[in-house]
Image (cartoon, rainbow, N blue to C red; front, side, top):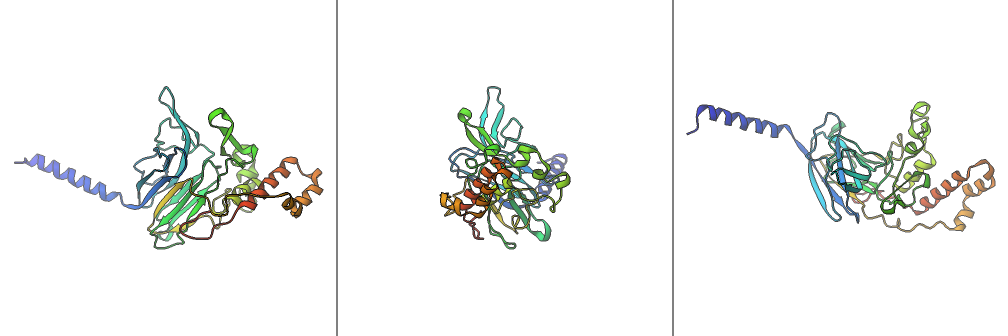
Length: 312
């Protein structure tokens, strides 16, 4: 027979566990999917004042997925680390989007840019979830967010499904990988140059003064539904309510976005390029080369229609 003391202790423990379980209300399931041909180590960082998730980092092998329960009113960001290794001292590091923790779990550490970021605020204004994919800190791999089961908001998919490490402007490329010769990530102009006009600070610290640049337009034309610079607002934050979310690394590209052709005829017929050739002495060769890359990229892009299964 249980003594009064043991019974009291057992009752208190049961009540504590019940209160603890009721205190964490889960509002969504996040399913992370790796469709890349290489391993990805997702990282999950909770925002200030929001409940932590059950993990802050793990391995996703190619073709696998992992689902997590996410608390009500959670906010934070998710990203994928690539080219990760464990050295002889058991220190874990990644060539792209490392969090600097030295382990697979990132704890409360954010991504070291460049990194493609999936950002969430659940149960925000009017009970809506707000979500977006940001290239403001650069790009390291394709990511899309697809909601399911939503009851309000537009509930559209969003993200960046384009592979940008190859066509990334040379001055923004991060060279790494085996042999150190391939581009493994693409920096933001802010990260590379540090100029206020790219970072939207100082005299460029308002939406009226900080405008798109050729570098942000490179990202924008490849991924029109992702943030390309700090004040790239308007159509790239999406809303939904009471939804679950699938975050996919390396999703299948959009139809019509597989082949990029920008011929000599295109160049000769393009009034902006023709005008730049006439005024070549007033523009740097870097600017002309960047504009040509921009035109080539724009010729490739077929913007996505709004739907629950596509993202640009």
